[in-house]
Image 1 (cartoon, rainbow, N blue to C red):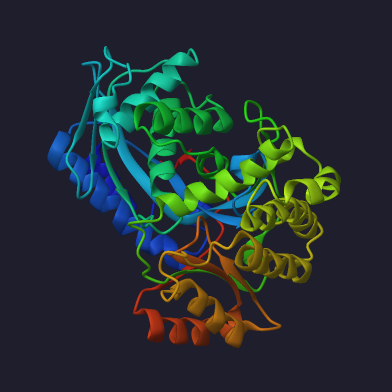
Image 2 (cartoon, helix red, strand yellow; image 1 turned 120 degrees about the vertical axis):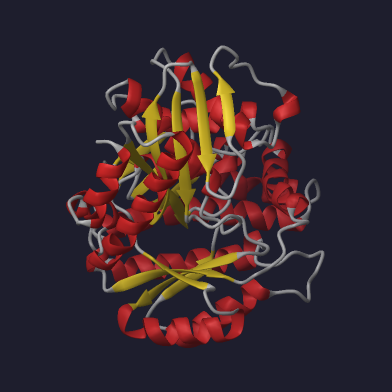
Length: 426
C-alpha cells in the first residue's frame, strides 16, 4: 500500500485488528493509529509519497528476574513490553540503507562497506551497518531500503531502547528481503553482534533476545554460544495486575565502574576457585570452598556470588510459578529477588554517593503501599534509574498518584507484557 493510502486506512481503523494483536488494549490501538499515521507521513515527506510501504515493530523489554546473572553465564527471565520502536520502510534500488529516526540525523549506510570501524563507535549509523553485516554473514539477502522510525522506549530507563532499534532493523531485513524467515533468535544474536563489534559496547544477549523473541522468555546462558531460550505461556492480562516501571530520576553519568564491579567481583570468586565465571562452579562447591576463598576476595564479592546462585534458582522458580498460573507465588519470588539485589548484590545505590538513594526511596514507598499485595524490585543494572512493581489493579491509581507526587508527573510508566517480539505489523 502506498503512503497516502495507508494513512487514510490507519485513521479509518482498517488496521485496528493488526494493531490490537501487538498492543492488546483497545485504548492503545487508538493511540497507535495516529502514531503510525504520523510516521508514514514523515516517510512520505522525506522519501516520497509514491512508494509502497510496510510497518515493522520491535519492543522494549523488562527484566523480570535474574538481576546481574547473565554476565556470569546465569539464567534470566525477561519480557517484551508495549513500548516499542516502529519503522515505516520501503525498498530502494541503490544498495544503500537510509534510516531517519525521529529527532535524530539520518543514518546512511553504503552496503558495499560493511566492515567495522572503531572511529564509528558510539554512533547509531554503526548499529545499522552492523545489523546489515550480521544478517549478510548468516547468508541472508541484504539490500537497500529507506525508513523512518520513531520510538517510545525511553532511553536510560532500563527498557533497552538500543536493543529495540537493532532488532527493528533485523526485522526489516527479514521481512523486506527474506520473506520473514530469519529466526528471532538469530536476529537477536545479530543485534548483539552489531552492538559489540560495530557500536563498541560489550553488552550481553538478554536485551536483544527479549525484544526479538517476545512475551515472557527465559534464557539460560550456560553456553553463551548456544543459550537455551524458552517462551513462557502466561497471559499477564488476566493476572489482575499492572506492570509499573518507576523512573526515579537518578544520575547515570558515573556508574560504569559500579556495573563493572558487579561482574568483576563475581568473576573474582570464580577465579579464586580456578574458573572463569560462577556458572562453572556449583553452589555446593562454592560453599565448601568459602573458608579458603574468603581471604582471597573481598566480602562484597562473596555476597554477590551468593546473590548469583540464589537468583538462578529464583529464575527457575519464577518460570515454574508462571507456567503453573500461580501469580501469588511469582510475586513472592520477585520480592525475594529484590531483597537479594538490595542486601547481597548491593546495586540499589552507588557507594560513591551513599546519601543519594532514590531507588531505595521508591522501593520503600512501594513497600508501604503494596506490602502483602504486590511485588517490587530494582530494575536492570541498578545503582540509579528505575524500579519495577507489579501492582494490583485496584491499587494502581493510588500507587501512581503517590509515586508521581514524589518523583514527578510521568515518572510511573504503566505497561503491559506484549505478546509478540519483532514483527511486521502492516
